[in-house]
Image (cartoon, rainbow, N blue to C red; front, side, top):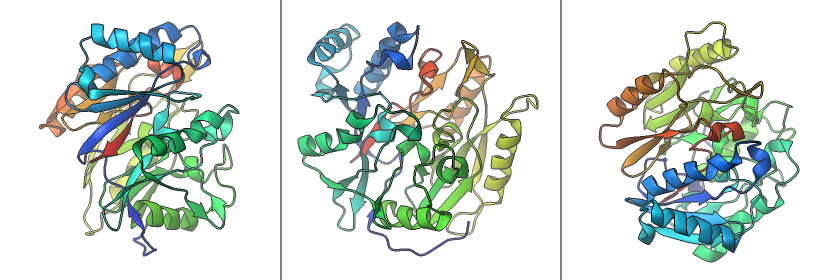
Length: 350
């Protein structure tokens, strides 16, 4: 897409910009991991442990008992308890990236929360608690909350549907935002979304890729497809397996990205990340993707899947994140809930 000029009120920092904390919601919904739920808290303990070493972590629990159990386990795991804060808020699911606070800066540099409406990816019925979480966080942290509207309608959007470079460019997929399947905002066009992104996220250009990956029940989230890792560098899925159902869509996305340019009319540096071999559970394909990583101040937490490509991609991450420590997290069980590390975290910028 070409650059456009719409009114800008706020600006969303990039994920790698200095963070003050990470928000996490603790797992409790056993329906999201049938026959595997008992293994899920262990993954969360591992992630919180690594996060807490050198930055703050805010954990949301549904019950006090959950909090007490987690507190004891985190102490045993030698997590840095001084960096962990505990909150008791009712939630439906753990995927706080999609319903949690999107922190942006206003024109005076003040941090506010953009509270997109959440309706569980236009797929599930149990989402009312998740949709209220930002009001609770805003009250506790004394942040101003902004409700984005367009054409007098409250805008539905998930954090995993978008990715920004912090310098005016956003990447997303048409499948997620423009398809009539799991339709978030009926009637919204490309122009509508670009006005919304400009106003609330400070976006001057949107890169529209085509589709997400097979098994993604969000219907096309970008954080399983491609992500900025710096202002002009983008990681994107790739595969040589022509028999993979993802092959054609991956190659289409790659071609689109290769033709795109930044705001200075220069090409992006594109780094191809191999897709892991197809993963199934109970005959259902799950959205295993190395793209679902999370960048912190000093680390990058990277999902692994007990796949032969795990070692290959970790070397790629080390090459392109020379100033950060690469932490592999086994997400072989977590992915049965159709999400991984990026889906279950949301950064709060400095």
